[in-house]
Image (cartoon, rainbow, N blue to C red; front, side, top):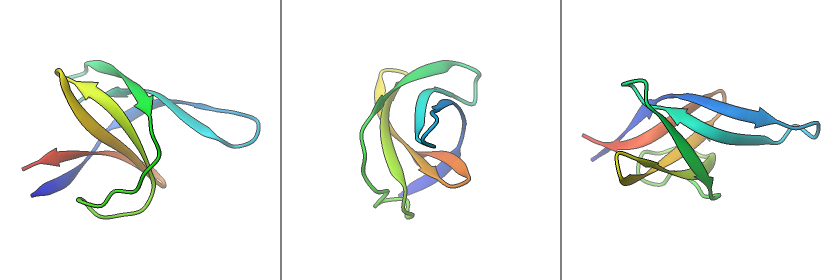
Length: 75
């Protein structure tokens, strides 16, 4: 089962209104860079933009589901 874990994200907003996430801050305070890929969240539910990031040497998906960011995490 997959759940949503809401996280803090550092992002760049351009003059056209585009959002580019740069890093995610994990719950222990560690900051991880983000590789951007677009997709929907199918496992945890919701619609938004999916980004791929590495946290503790594992690949996680980060989603922007306005107005919050979340990571898909296994229970």
